[in-house]
Length: 67
Figure 1 (tube, rainbow, N blue to C red):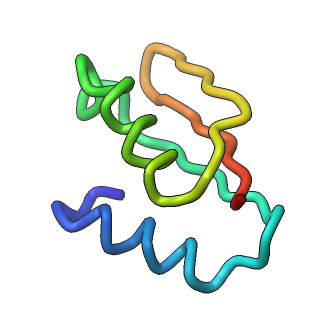
Figure 2: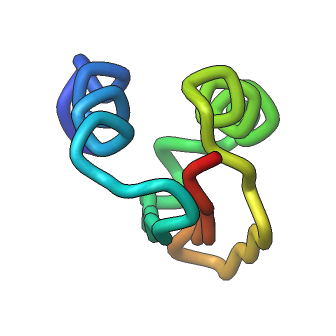
């Protein structure tokens, strides 16, 4: 998701995945700092549910399911 058009990539993921398919996202923590809740909301608006979110010092991980 390093691309500024990350929403286009998420939309494409939603288009090609079957219902109840899993999508895993790993983002650098520094890029997501202060934007994690916004990013999670954007994922959910596109038709995914965020099942689990984990963060470490270097990365933020999202475990999502297509609705």
